[in-house]
Image 1 (cartoon, helix red, strand yellow):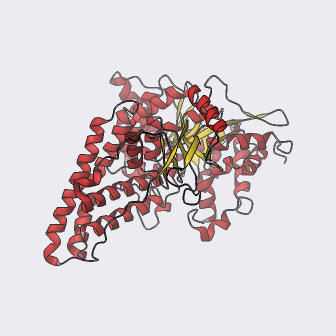
Image 2 (cartoon, one colour):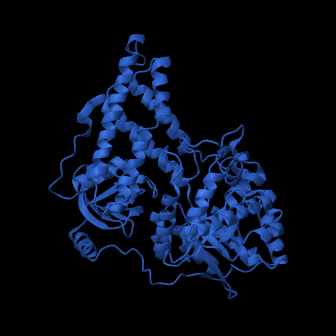
Image 3 (cartoon, one colour):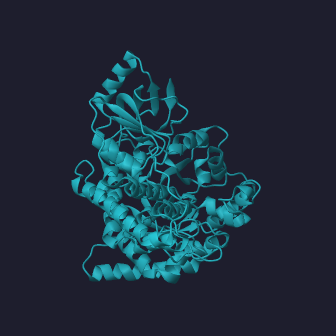
Length: 551
């Protein structure tokens, strides 16, 4: 049997299936007696300490090839355990609701994870998986004590771990057991589990319906995480061919190949860039021959509970990504927190209607200017020897851009005064995702160096239809919502001031072949897409019916 999946970590491996069963916990009473409250709180602290010691052991013991990713990720998990306010809320459940520690932990973590899982941002959803993993660890410690973290023995024959999810603890197990590969039902490319498996060089194939694929313990498997194929009961010829590919190593994409634009039938071309959620996705630019990164979302840096990252952390992250890109453009969006993107422990975005409140640049300018200044300094430093630009989310009027440009100039001067190298010619752009901003394109272009249309939010605000509410999604049809008429206005207004070449689209519409064709008909010649959609978008634009705007 052959199954198709999603490549999470490239490579080729042959082994037998080792099914990872869901964790089982002993049953606990619904409530406890009042006199047992302090005992349960003591159990909670003891269990938390066991998990902390377990994680610290891994932080100390992990070395190459995962010298950076592994300690950083498990250090982030330690920060969750050190979030005193969060664990006080668990104690409150024990004291006031008389819940046993196990149930109090489950309720608190479930509530926090559900908030993140409801986000449309893949990085917030990935952090929900981390919280579930930590919750499971604490519950294991409560149920089994030190026996909860006894290591699985390494096996004599190559094994392929088969699991429905992709948690960091699974990556730990795969690394310790020397697993040949991992097969999972998850497609979370930017989960910490996926990042750890890539760092360890363990081939991983996602999107496999493991509950329906009839894979049993001991089933021979061939995992080709270069082509995205899983073979059950492979033949000798299949295994021989796989071992040949294994000897030659994975193909990460030829970095020497130039970017490949979409050549239109009329002779023009459309520049294709990548939307990235994490630096680990940078090789996709080369695999899919994209010009660079048109939208780098930075929210993953603030996805933990330990507060926002410092300047040095942000600087290194952006600089390292720019180095990997090797001179290709990189557009860094400042933190777009608010609405559905409210990480645990990060406050300042909530209100009666968060989607219409302090989100994105509004949040920065009104309540967290120092957080913005820190991020701008990091980007300025990283852009000295690289083609890096800044993109502002949730811009409402040109005054928002003017305010940020003023701050940018101040921080540039301060860096220079300290003798710190920083770019003084960095490009500053604004996202068009609020209708009021889209309606004053000419004024926006007076203060911004470029504009990027975020169609996801633009259609949401245009139709007053929450994009996370299935009951109103039908209103967001781009042909019936007025979105295309608004985008035509945007393009015509930019053309009137001869700045139409400074427009791009980075929303999901650009990754849809038919949507991309319509954007090109309207005159857009720069699209930022999900990397894996590049080939289909390129093919759609190069088809004979894809032509320039008429009328």
